[in-house]
Length: 475
Ligand code: NAD
Image 1 (cartoon, rainbow, N blue to C red):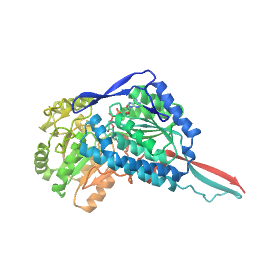
Image 2: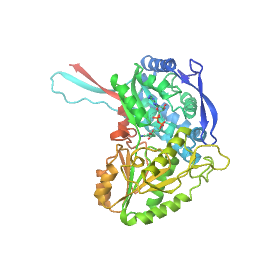
Image 3: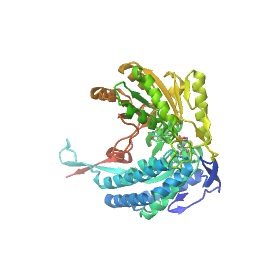
């Protein structure tokens, strides 16, 4: 682990193994943190905040350190990507792009650090001036999942540090290695000891003690709904701020006037990229009656051609899912869908490409799905697409919004007024029209309903790590 600028084992000496999803073999050992390790890390972050230099550096100096970190990440992106692939099994091509792109968050928030301005509002009292300044919160807990470990960390760490906070990171127990490797770059960027700390371990043993530690003032979490709810409840008890990015069951809606040459590959990448393990996966495909048969045929043909195999091989389209537990969960959802009466028209089984011992699932497509089935309501987080049929716009909106989630929605149409209407009617934090999956450091991202609280990315997100202070000054 990385605490106060030093590499550290768990106090108990306990470790746990990290497996490579392609081979199914363990490849690394991680310290298994408990409450005393969490306390060491939080105390270090607290000292760095309360007594250290970081919050007292000028905002410009903090920003410059983050820009240096961005440069180091760019230089080391393939190395970081290779570690991520060993841990989560995603395609090297995708992780390499993602790690390079991730550097932008540090450059963007580094640039923003000295542009957060306070204000002097007109005041209704004579002889006084009121100044509003923005101050950092203190120690922030950053808890990340396994699907995009460093990218989703950047969404949190870049604005948290730019604002002058210190952080304790708890990466997923399945993918801790890349976050630890990043700490070498944090050191090289000149970020002082104690400002960034990493503890490795499990959700209940390390994550929850971090959330409930009295010196932690803010929790930024990406992960599943159950953990999100537990964290939100625990944080509420002590009035801590939270940002929660949770799951989704996003509708991808194709109208009969859409450009099918774009919509078919867009749908495929929306659900099958990262073997379906993205929170924004377009896992419910809604097709208008008149194009239903043609679309299903084209989609099935193109998906059937996908190559399932080694994530390091550039020819591979579908790599393993990240964990044995995830593999079992996905296969059980396939069984549930069949038992519910949905028709499996493609895939539906575990796959085992030659030479691998890992966790593969065939890209799977279900038709005859009703929106009240579990396969249409619950997040599978795997390469499983449910197809539903709709007749008109109102029905598409009704089915699309009939979910507890509200992270994203896709709309495919060449009618501009319909595109606008649909964008407004969909209950989701992000709506893509004639595209799917784009996110950017410049653009707010987050969910409504059970998909989460607060927003990451963009100018406003830095305010999630700041609090306003009113200073009254008599003449
Ligand atoms: P998870 O909720 O099991 O774990 C996420 C992190 O939280 C891990 O670091 C884990 O150790 C920790 N954790 C688990 N229980 C905890 C607890 N009680 N207290 C504190 N920490 C705890 O999720 P996962 O399986 O790693 O990730 C998959 C989930 O993440 C999916 O549901 C997916 O939709 C969601 N996700 C959301 C987004 C988004 O931006 N909305 C992005 C990616 C993934």
